[in-house]
Amino acid sequence: MDKKTKTIALIIATVLVWGYSALEWIDYIGASDEEYSTQVSSYIPQVTPLKLKPKKENKLQLNYRDPFLNSKKQRKTSNHTASFTPTNNRGTATNRQPTKQVETKVIQWPEINYSGVINNQLGLLKVNGKDYLVKVGDIKDGLTINEIHPDKIVISYQTEQKEFEKKS
Image (tube, rainbow, N blue to C red):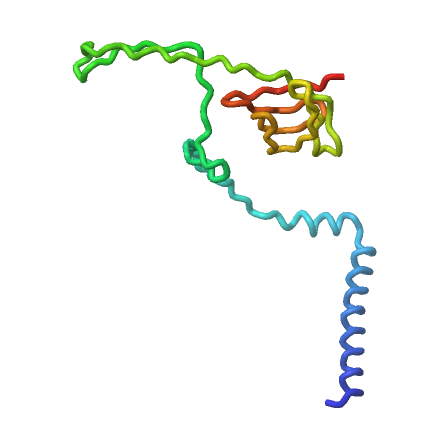
């Protein structure tokens, strides 16, 4: 086929597609509401309800080594100890010594004043009278900056974590 024949064939195909589209549009506009509603209501899809499986309860074991800090996250120790009497498989008490009470060490935090945030990234912090411009992840005087918000900052020191409100 030469170039002229291809052009004529494409023009005829285009006119046929647009003509069919125009006829459908005219038929849609000219149809009364009753005819249209019977066409729509005649098609009712068959819907089957879904059967849902019960959810499995998954428990996460997060006692793995932190790949970034090269150490395990330490848990906070509580101020109370639980006592329990060990028993053998017959339900009678055994002659074991009770466990020793765990002493908790009180951590002395430095004096911290949070003044605010700059560009939602940097925090203005005063630690024991020294001014610092900190971002998340920084370590200043043993304090690790965990989160920075316009109204508060979250800092961890040794094994504890605290929030400090913005001072005006």
